[in-house]
Image (tube, rainbow, N blue to C red; front, side):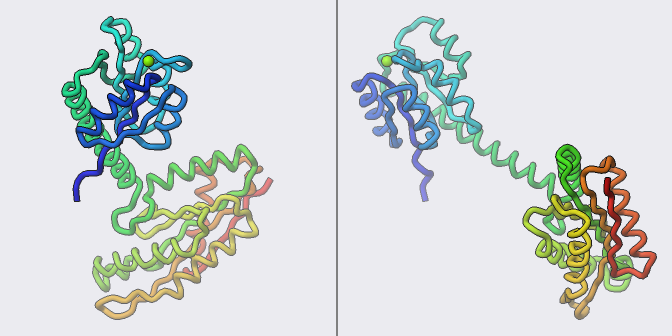
Length: 307
Ligand SMILES: [Mg+2]
C-alpha cells in the first residue's frame, strides 16, 4: 500500500498558466484541482482538502494575498506557495504577511517547482503527524488509564462548564457521585487485579446506564461522578436509582468466581435558579454519598437545591 497521492490546488486566472502548472504537478505524480478565480479557489480549498496550494498573486477580484489569508484561516495546515509573477521583494513581503509559506517567480522552472513542492509536502506531513500526536495526547490527558472513561481532570473541566451554563440560563443540573461499597475488602480478599476488574465492570455498566447527554468520569479510586445536564429534582432520583440497580444486577466474572458489587450514590439536583457555587453543589452530592454509606450502603440519597 503506497502513500496516498497528494492533491495540489492550482489557483490562477490565466488558463495557460493553470494548465502548465497542472502538467508539471501531474508529471511528478500529484493529483490536481484547478480554480480560475480566488473565490473558486477558496471554495475548492475547503471541498477538496488539498495538501498544497499554488496561488497566483495577480488576479481580478480577490487577489492572491486575500486568498492566502482566507485559506490560512482554516484549522488544518495547508502550505500556500505564491507565484509572484515579478521579482520584487515587496510582493513576497506582502505574501508572507498574508500567510504564504513559499514564493516562486513566474515563469517557473518545472524542476524547481517540483522540488519546492516536495519540500513543502514534507513539512505538511510532519505538521499533520504532530497535530495527530497532540490530539492523542489531549485525549490521554482526559482519560482514566484503567477504565478508559473520563478522569478527574476532565470531570472538573466539564463540571465547571455545566455549572456555569446552568447558573447563567437557570437550567436544571444534577450531579451523582457513586462509590463502590466495601471496595477495600474486595482488594484485600481477592487482590488488586480483581479489584481492577470490578472497577472496569462498574464503569462499563455506568457508562451504559447514563444518557448520551450525561458525562461519566472516574473521580477517585473507586468513586465515579455523573454530570446530568437538564436533569432536575424529579429526574435525579431516577438517575441515581438506575445507576444503583444496574450495578446491583452486575455479575463480574473473575478467576476467583463470580463477584457481585454494589454502589452507594449521593445525588444533588439543582434547579439552576437558587444561587450556589460549584464546590458547594458538589459537596451536597458528597454529603449524600456519606449519608448513603451511613444508612447501610447500596442506596441513593438525594438532596435538592431550589430557589
Ligand atoms: Mg494572474
